[in-house]
Length: 66
Image (cartoon, rainbow, N blue to C red; front, side):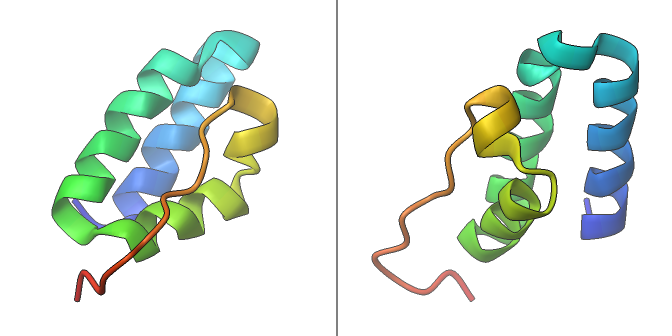
């Protein structure tokens, strides 16, 4: 997965499920975390305001995932 694919999947989930999109977004975010690490995960949390809208908090990164 890449960031563009993740963005599209998040937007689709938000469109389809509205305020109930969190479970679908969680699946996307788990894949993002696994494939691209904390930096990409946190970028999407901020970009889509996921913490406020869907209670998906940014990851704390104690080490670099690059």
